[in-house]
Image (cartoon, rainbow, N blue to C red; front, side, top):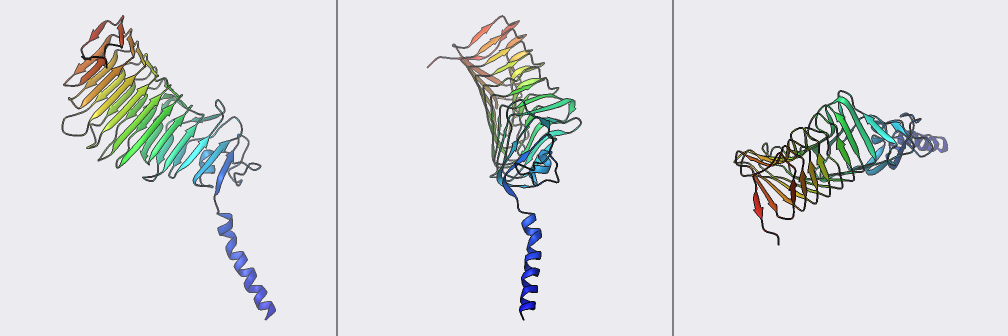
Length: 310
């Protein structure tokens, strides 16, 4: 009887081993000299973000220990990836650097990562689904397409970018473009969107929802088409872009609103200088600016509606 009992206990213990081995940690680590066969612990870190994310619980956090290239990653759950500035890189030649395709209420937070596309990366950061995405102290550069492409297809999704640089991309720096019935709400602060096709673009033309973007204390300069752009077509949602205390300089258009009256840009307390055209309204697009914005040394200041100061 004792032998039988001992056998049963051992069998249960052995049966539980795979489940214990598969348990995910709330906090994991990666290192440039790590190994994805490791458990991603502090003393036995993983090598890549993709290796670590499979061993990190939903709502958990991946920490970067030291400099290294950590590879592209697809995020399907709430998670944070944290790196000291200047240490962690993703080189995404021919692919996307980070794809977010998470649950409707999942919050994704990325800090301190540099994503470099060598002019062939399709997207630096591509958001397809999730509750929110925060990019803090992130660099996205040299992408063959957009730097940050925020394109939820349902619900209301939120994007926050702070203290970041999205520059030198062949496509748009930050492109907020919901599809289906989605509404996308984006806030950009203390950031640089320079040397792209356009710095920031709000575009609800493919959605029945809205694209609502605010930019504050930021710079959108040296972009091929426009520093700030809104595009929409009649009948869908609205594309709204509010720019406050920011600089739009040396672009073809400082701000450009195009497509319909549902494409709306407001500019307050900002500097619009050195552009071929300061403000550009076309095909019904609307730009409103109050008198405390500075327009100077543009080829033409362009057309807009002046709002009285309050």
